Length: 337
Image (tube, rainbow, N blue to C red; front, side, top):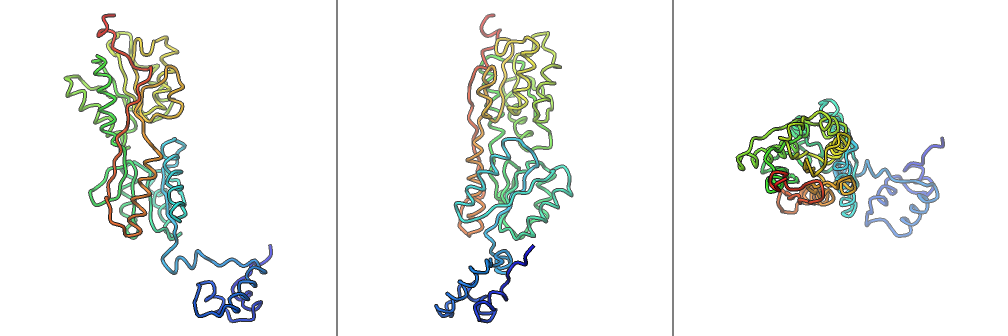
């Protein structure tokens, strides 16, 4: 492999000192136009590219941001990271994304150290697990940090969906349809989103004078399918399910078809996310819509305002929208069936 040209090679070709080349690279006003032209021509001829990374680190200005995200193919985290990168590029910043296993403290620490070595000026965290966020807060003190869908203090940058409100809206929709035996299939208990959605469900059930019942899930299609196959529906006591994400809900709907149970004739189902495929499964899924693009854009806006010293709010919260489709209907007893 041929040796890459350096600043000294440029100096020899342009017949100037390496200090002069450095001043040209740094746009010094003291350089004569003819000298600058000669140096630029030598750089182009040799194919020399200044080490902008080293220069940026020396100036503490890299225009580089980090995204630390759960290493997953789930639509939400991937979509938010994509839209944050687009928003950052529009403001002249580049983004480096690092996937981590949020349940592994070493993975979290290694990810943070990798991004910090690159000289990032700000960090966005899409790892809504209690343990991961605690480790990140302890390790990162020198750059602004914005979290997405996590718990937060009033002095921390954070953007989130109001998951409590969403859980409440899903449950209230089923209550309003006359359902009284409503089960919640939750996400994993160490995720902020999961606990908040379950809390919204529980509060709404208790307010309606109903008894909450929670089955723990883990966001996966296969888990929704398994629970759908196992849950006892023979007594007809259970008539509705609020499921913490659309992936599990789609798996659950498949199990209902396999068991010959009519949705929504016998059982109503509500999901959460409004994935693209949720409107095309059978029956089309009633769900809570999260705007992942808006979440990503707002998170990046908060982070860049902090980096650039612009005064503004630190917390931002989006209310999810209830999208009613064909997987929910009035309870059989409320229609006289």
